[in-house]
Image (cartoon, rainbow, N blue to C red):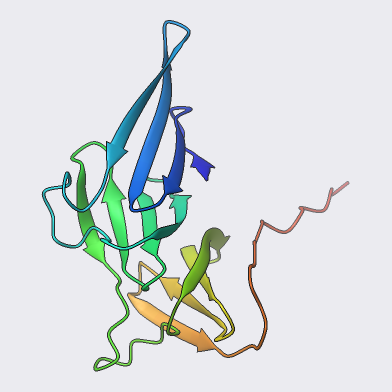
Length: 151
């Protein structure tokens, strides 16, 4: 579950991504899934993670390590970062359990965790994946380091 800059709440349930907004004090729910999104890159399995990027897009992931950068404005996936063992692109194999965004020195980076296989880091600007193996590591969250006060 995450929130975006507009105040919408985004959550995953089963095979769908849900946007919850408030209009005139009433909640409105909008569903997105592989059938409703006109894009074959949208994950079609059980969705296990969603994270909001600073540019207004969302990263959406399934347990089968299908990952896309979803643009809520166009309702399409604009980037596919799905695991491909033939490319050996640095993503650990699933099942994927969570994902988070961290603001690194070179821009936003995505971190994906899996059930027992470890975690991966993806730098969208560079288009590079890095793989870490770690046993029994189920979830990880990253936050910016606190800034020191200067005199």
